[in-house]
Length: 266
Image (cartoon, rainbow, N blue to C red; front, side, top):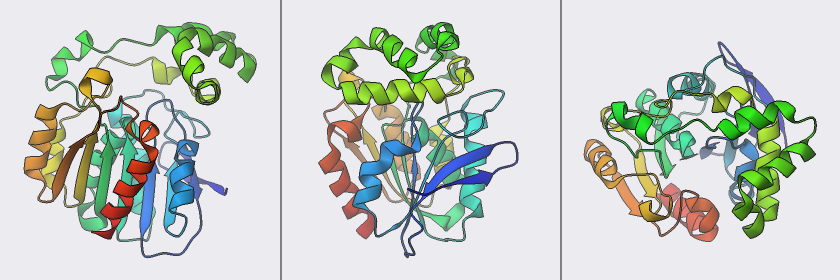
């Protein structure tokens, strides 16, 4: 699969493109601690469409930033989207990628025609209360400097998330490999690093939008109160909740593919 480099103002972004010519362009934006490859099943499924999938700053093969928060993550991705000649773009984002997608769409006018947000991290309305719910991942800040090879990361990651390796050792290995390649500073963040005023941003959204959340009792992050406020500001917006954790797509891959297929047709 072909990968390229986009030179934004302050960072170089690694991204995938399938180099297909199509009237439909999809941009996949992964979540925190992921990489563009997590979208491979959907890239294969929608291979007839023009597809881009980016590595976020500090993640996988993209260059690093000095400080990581939502307000530093999204500008380089916005530059990338703005640079594309396509005038009708579909954004698909997960978690942090969803929050970034909302920022991008709010500043892109009618260029973004559709937006599917998978469990955006809208779990606190009051920014000042983020510290009560968000803590630094000290495990990685302490262990990552000791890693010499990806095998070290895999060994340690089994201690960090033993349940993941029990349930899906393949995915556990991928997560550990990503952690090995990420910038350590992505874990060294302030408590409000991912907070956004989603209702305010949604006032300048023109895209048809689906807000897809997981079950809040199983780890889903999208609160109903914030989602409803966002929906009121977008003329064509649907809210869905599936009985999954935060990884909605990972738990219901077939259903997610069908949802996106039908959404694109609208």
